[in-house]
Amino acid sequence: MSDNRIIDGKAFAAGLRERVAVETDRLKADHGIVPGLAAVLVGEDPASQVYVRNKNRQMVEAGMLSLGETLPEDTTQADLLAVIDKLNADPAVNGILVQLPLPSQIDPNSVIDAIDPAKDVDGFHLRNAGLLATGRDGMVPCTPLGCRMLLEDRLGDLTGLNAVIVGRSNIVGKPMAQLLLDANCTVTVAHSRTDDLPEVCREADILVVAVGRPQMIKGDWIKPGGTVIDVGINRVPGREEGKTRLVGDVDFEAAVEYAGGITPVPGGVGPMTIACLLRNTLVAACRQNGVEVLGI
Ligand code: GUN
Image (cartoon, rainbow, N blue to C red; front, top):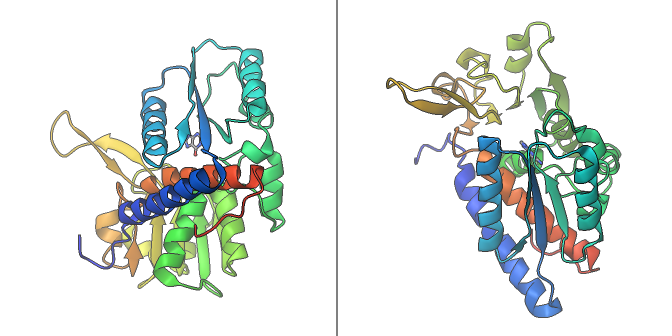
């Protein structure tokens, strides 16, 4: 697609993975360190299996170790916590990721907070959330980090821009707000209870949407020339009988007529999440070994 309104996350993510691979080679050559990620999958959720398989493949392609663990659906919380303890203590493991959602017998917060914060490459641990909220260096959640990279690549300095985030999750909405505040935006966090959401969206120089509702944001909610980052990945019935297709939280066909830049689904934010996971694993390995992080 050569339309310069389209923000090509797929291409940007490929470039980021390449830079991570180069730095990983350097870490290996100069320090004998190979970054390792343990992705823990509990149960057999098909979407989670696909995500974890993709993560493992891209880790290996970037020259890293993929040290995944798959546990049965009926794993107890105590058993999962024992696995986390073992990975925390393993020096070959620089990053730990527990794929969400977890089966209902397990409390996700207890599991996340059991991960060594230095190995928490998702950036979900209380300590990392606190570091981000107070403007200090920690592990930053992958999806919002990828969104900020795409925005800075497209717009340069974000200072003074009016950013509206639709969605207030711990995984995307809240850390996205912190990252855009840190980049000197004026930030509004909107959600399902916001009054007159269309009008709030129309004020946005930057609109980030992460609500998980297919095509909820309409074309005429977009500020003309504004930049739209669509985090949603929703599977809906396809145009042909029996087929499905992926759509975002934004009505792309309509919004592209208003936006100055917009991420497509698929091929926008999605590929950035794993690329940022590789980046975070590299950063974690460098910090754990007292090596300076360069060029990413
Ligand atoms: N499930 C959906 N998104 C994510 C993510 O970013 N990290 C983890 N651990 N699980 C997820």
